[in-house]
Length: 87
Image (cartoon, rainbow, N blue to C red; front, side, top):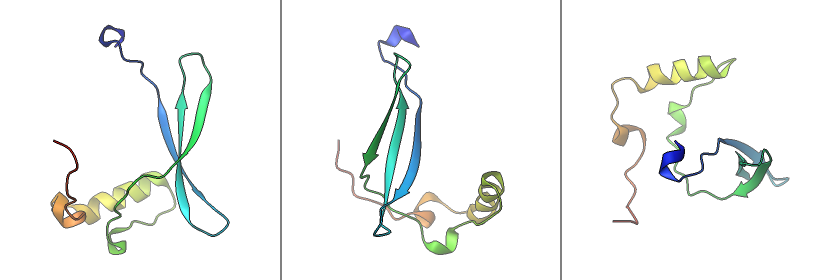
């Protein structure tokens, strides 16, 4: 990995909710010096229709349920096509 000249950082995403109930994301990333950063982010996001949501007692169960729900669907069936802003 170091041959490319890129620094590899592990990134995790969390969702916070402000007091007004509006959600935003927080990106937590590792730094090469062993420290971590936590940065609030506003990410343009398109959510799938609520009917596709999976609800379960664990993350693994929710993902398994979601895979069953999405089985046989194409990406465009799940999320609307967004206009591209690059190239």
